[in-house]
Image 1 (cartoon, rainbow, N blue to C red):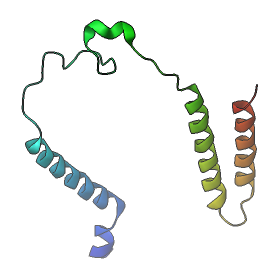
Image 2 (image 1 turned 45 degrees about the vertical axis):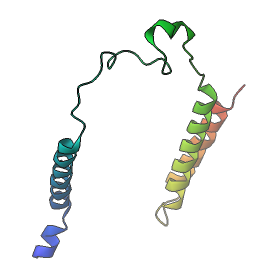
Image 3 (image 1 turned 90 degrees about the horizontal axis):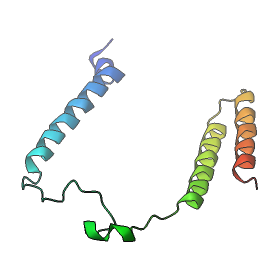
Image 4 (image 1 turned 90 degrees about the vertical axis):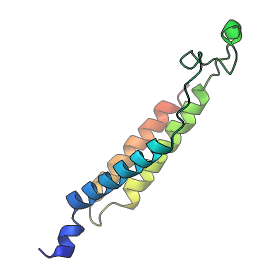
Length: 110
């Protein structure tokens, strides 16, 4: 192996990026805010309200958002698998399309 092949090998690049991120983390740790936190720093967050107003806590319903997120996740993975399938291997994309259709049927059932 040449020196260039060793430098661009996966383990060496992983360790280089790990070292770079550790150095960046140490740099940011030095720049972080050092002021002591307030007396309510670890209190539960209730929409920015004080602790005596927790009875007015708002709990939004994200159920419809889950359906949209699940739909787009399934569709993006499906398109990625079908678009990058190797030539001549048609079974995997067909299986993914079938599973995607099944997931959509389950998702949008009444």
